[in-house]
Amino acid sequence: MIEIKQVRKSYGSLEVLKGIDLTIDKGEVVAMIGPSGSGKSTLLQCINGLETISSGEIIVDGVSVFDKATNLNHLRRKLGIVFQSYNAFPHMTVRRNVTLALTKVLGVSRDQANAIAETQLQRVGLLAKADVYPTALSGGQQQRLGIARALAMGPSYMLFDEVTSALDPELVAEVLATLRQLSAEGMTMILVTHEMQFAREVADRVVFFHEGVIAESGPPEQIFGNPKSERLRAFVSRAG
Amino acid sequence: MSYNFQFGIVLDALPDLMQGAALSLSIAIVTMAVGIVLAMPLAVGSWNGKGLVTFLSRSWIELARNTPCLAQIYFFFYGLGAFGIFLSPWLAVGIALCFNNAGYLAEIFRGGLKGVNANQMKGARSLGFGPVGAYRYVVFPQVFTNTFSSIGNQFIWALLNTSLGALIGLYDLSGVAMDYQSRTFKTFEFFLAIAVIYFILAKLVLFLANRFKPGGARHAA
Ligand SMILES: Nc1ncnc2c1ncn2[C@@H]1O[C@H](COP(=O)(O)OP(=O)(O)OP(=O)(O)O)[C@@H](O)[C@H]1O
Ligand SMILES: [Mg+2]
Image 1 (cartoon, each protein chain N blue to C red):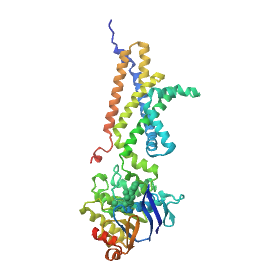
Image 2 (image 1 turned 120 degrees about the vertical axis):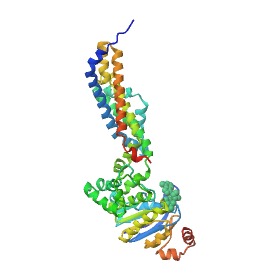
Image 3 (image 1 turned 30 degrees about the vertical axis):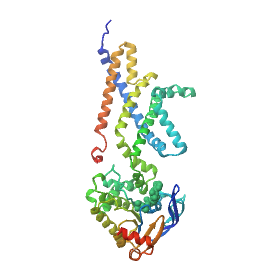
Image 4 (image 1 turned 90 degrees about the vertical axis):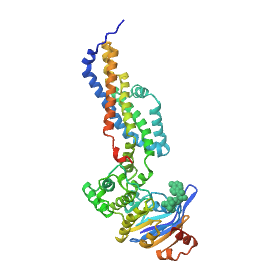
């Protein structure tokens, strides 16, 4: 379970998160939507401690992320994250991208790491590309590599930050198919997305961000079918 | 008055010159290796460290790059003597060149670090790497690729700088030549010979560097 309690965060004088409360249960798929700059990416990166918070608390399976005693490197293995911009490691093959942290962080043997990599690359449909370098991959393939790399660490939660937003339309479908498959397997996921149709389809709950607060949240039917606030109504109709 | 060129003497001295060249090359290799290891934390510290770390790493880089290498060698050879520390010529040259190389390489790496996307660091940290592991396995391999030719140039500088060791009695390539010319008075011959040898060594280093340049094709976009 991920518990986000009264989280505030500022960049200098700019307050980006203004008191966020959100709880995500095991097995849940939560979609975060909202206009650009509303703080979605920031919150996602706070959950695994890549960004710090100004006040409040985030608790992952009973462990407080920002407690001084918390080993963040250890905690991050539970929280897979895939970013908006591709960040495959360009100096190593697709396979090595997946095995690097397995061998160097978890201490898994090369053979075992390769076996895990093959399983995960198969899962995202990239096994045939295992021995090429990431520059030879399309954007969609790079995102799927990011997903495989995160999954290889055996996370309990997966955080996705607009993983399709930088992709050409024809590449979006392949990435969404991978996400759909993960949700079918019961993975707990938080996904920031601009794909409303997709959010409606896979999410158990949709959270609408607006200017650093959660302006509205609820099941997809309610958020998309019967939005309460004018803001959300406008956002949904604009986003289609 | 005519000067009588005698390159035969140089040929006789060739085995000793080669031994000197081997010492020069070894010192260059070792001080470059140490320099690269030291330059990594220096580059990071001077770039995004804080407080004392930044001050110390910046000072190192500034001193190494803005004082003559000869002064650095003299400092470790004669200067430390004032504190009762007496180093042998090769140790003084070795330490001075490590200091010198680390400073120049840190500046090179600092530029290289800017060329590595911040997302790479985030990606590594998100997989559970600590800062050291992230730099070691993800960031610096890319910095090395970006700065490869500059590292090669620094290697050549290191090799040529070893010649300064002759001034404190190091029996490197220049030291051997100085010794022979003082005994035979064939100054021109010996210094021409070692100039040629340094030149060949430098070109050889460049050739090998280009030969083993990492990731040429795969980074070409
Ligand atoms: N490192 C930073 N330094 C200063 N301001 C930042 C930084 N990162 C984000 N911001 C600001 O914080 C606000 C929230 O950014 P964030 O990336 O979380 O928004 P978002 O909801 O993910 O938007 P988008 O849909 O465009 O990705 C924005 O105003 C942004 O400019
Ligand atoms: Mg964002």
